[in-house]
Amino acid sequence: MPVVDNVHAFLDALGRNERLLGVDLGTKTIGLALSDVERRIATPLETIKRTKFTADAIRLTEIIDRHGVTGLVIGLPLNMDGTEGPRSQSTRSFVRTFDQRRPINVLFWDERLSTAAVTRSLIEADATRKRRAEVVDRMAAAYILQSALDAGTARE
Image 1 (cartoon, rainbow, N blue to C red):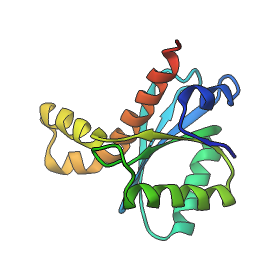
Image 2 (image 1 turned 30 degrees about the vertical axis):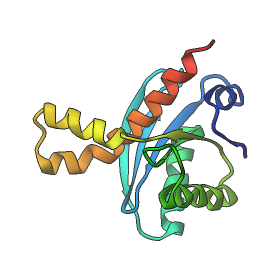
Image 3 (image 1 turned 30 degrees about the horizontal axis):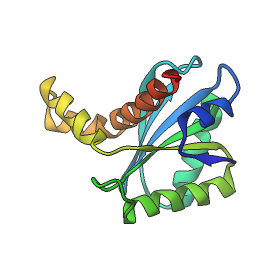
Image 4 (image 1 turned 180 degrees about the vertical axis):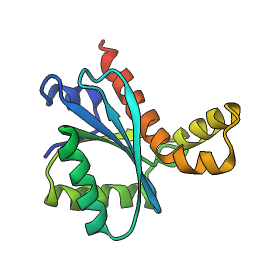
């Protein structure tokens, strides 16, 4: 399926009333967030503890199918200067391999500072360290997805 970096082209390729899944792909966990069918609001969904690719892909596919997701917004971990490093390459590799199992529309979205922004807001909300650890990945996925949704509604 198409993998794009342009939010408008991505959204134009989808049908109406189709959900998106925001994905914060970490080395130990995968944070997930779900959009509403009108693609206005991103809601933190769950965090998958990573094991092996096959198990991760099966769980991700189950979630996609259960919620009727037709597109993924994948956080792309760029370096601060905007270049791609090893983590970006790993993310792209995961998506290529996943697409062979379960083709789906994909939008890569710059995730720089998303986890830091979420962590800062959790600290301001006086969340305990344990609570922050439990929710930060899925909240980062919601932050990534919401950023893409907001950009998609800002047509020129």
